Image 1 (cartoon, each protein chain N blue to C red):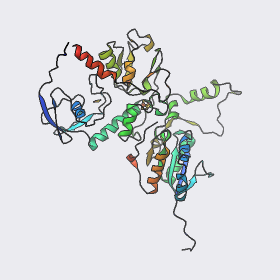
Image 2: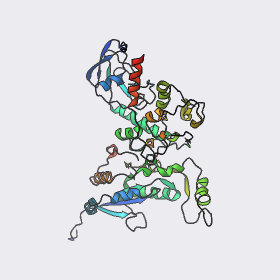
Image 3: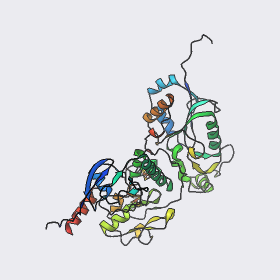
Image 4: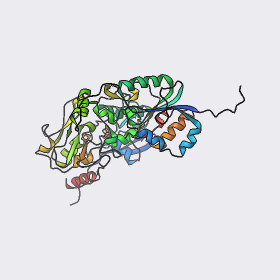
Length: 243
Length: 184
Ligand code: SF4
Ligand code: SF4
Ligand code: FES
């Protein structure tokens, strides 16, 4: 069976960081930037999952617009002039990382993901060497009721990659977000123990896509939790072929 | 002017560990033979490495390991700040409160009861109160208590990073965001 080509739409030309680039009208600034090896930092975005524009790390400046727009959910337009690396953006990105670090308890030294964590490495590359806002130090739970995996809410940044991969790829929709603001938490089923979940297939996709040490395989000690993400683009590609 | 040969000018350095594990100080010693060169440029005026009892006046640079976890830490860090030109938050416990902060979501009384009365098999279970500092409700990063000039993350910071930061301070520079080190 030959895959049906997806109509890509009209071609748009624009400038990113002064470079002339082009893309289809249904593509995002982030996609075009990546195709042209222009690096924009991201956290909630993951190739193969729908974008939701939640983390605000990918904010870019657009000439003529006062407000900043998230590159992962902004489609390209003819004549757009995009800046991806200005002092204003660097300041915003550091603030995002600092807020994430202060919101829960990130004790990297004793974390399963130490050395393999997207939040930790973004802090380093963006030059966050301390946090200006006071830490909240909330008391958060660890759910270790599942036979193979655990969730440590102390390390969760609510990117919802786990929610989306479980819904969009595995089709189980075990995960969800409950509560608002700082009270927001990821929950399994109807806020039940993960181990008691009737929908979880124990596939482990959520664990592999989680950018931090929040979702982990049991039995991993400090720094041992490395994640495999290569499966995701393959799965989406294969699904597209089946449509 | 006296005609005694002038000693090369050395900067006055202090180091201390508050609520930390001494790992950052171990990492300092890991500078190995580079310490010999530093010894010509630095005079250690207060430190667990030397035998000084009181925080001296007029310190050029103070490396502070550990978070602020007790009333004693609180007093000492304020005194250090008053007497120091460049205060360096030395390692994750000083920068983020790190592992000691894991008690921050708990009640101090409950922590002490658990530590002294409920775990192990204490011979005379009692919470010590005489001659030891009282714990604060939460362990705080140093910069939440006094202004900090240089941040050196890492658990512990590598000997190379310590060497870089000390070198910068010796040259009269504050590395600021130039310190690109990983937490943990
Ligand atoms: S999840 Fe990442 S940033 Fe948080 S403690 Fe673990 S390694 Fe550090
Ligand atoms: S558990 Fe991990 S993947 Fe899920 S929302 Fe939290 S940080 Fe994101
Ligand atoms: S990657 Fe765009 S908002 Fe998170």
